[in-house]
Length: 68
Image (cartoon, rainbow, N blue to C red; front, side, top):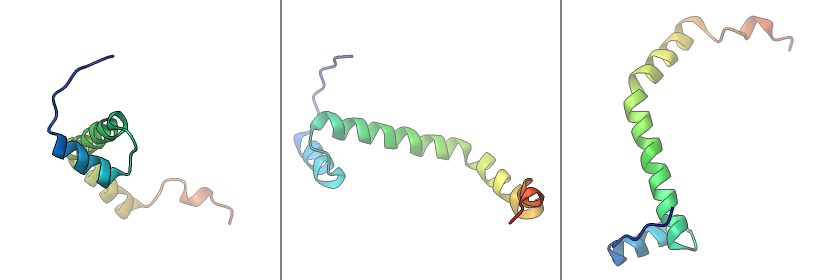
């Protein structure tokens, strides 16, 4: 989808330098993906912690199936 945005040029330059991306489109896409991933982790942190606690307490369910 084509979209026209007015983005602070200094911000774009910083993102290009930090990300190593060669194009503004790639840099913005990367920034958006990282934002989404960070929010997903924040929203699911309680479930992630509960899962990790369960693994700590009981171990991995397939542990007894290993043959090595």
